[in-house]
Amino acid sequence: MSIEVVNESGITIDEAQIVSVARYALDAMKVSPAAELAITAVGLDAMEELHVRWMDEPGPTDVMAFPMDSLTEDTRRPDAPDLGPALLGDVVLCPAFAREQARKAGQTLADELHLLTVHGILHLLGYDHLEPDDEREMFALQNRLLKAWREDRARERARDAQKRSDDRLLGAAGFEDEPGR
Image 1 (cartoon, helix red, strand yellow):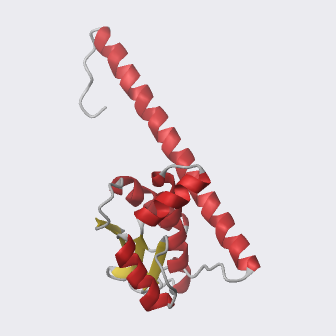
Image 2 (cartoon, one colour; image 1 turned 180 degrees about the vertical axis):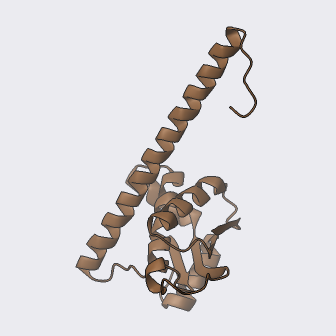
């Protein structure tokens, strides 16, 4: 799966974490590994232009999604040949807009961008929140995905910390770290 992040916003974002949460969500949603996703962070003016052009709504917004191909395993015949790379779509984030939302929600800009990345991906996969039932379904799924990703990251950090501690202890005891360990 190819995920490309381009930051044109002028605001520093952790692109690796955006890729991580996007990959986690796409894997959890069983999106084909042949899919390609583009995530672009833009400034307020660029987002306003997109919002007006595609949604006919004034002002900037936090995230927009532009779906292309449908590549979930459930939409293909089991005997279909493997697909080559195909574009799932584009997610456009606006960190400047998201920063204010994050402040109001009492969370970091990074947390807000992770949420918006998952939100945008769910839109690419056909979820929306126009009707109350659809909104409940989409937001519950979004929250489950984010929670699971955060828990996975916490376990990863704990494993890394334990390995560093073990390596220090082994080094202090005179044992060298074995290649490939």
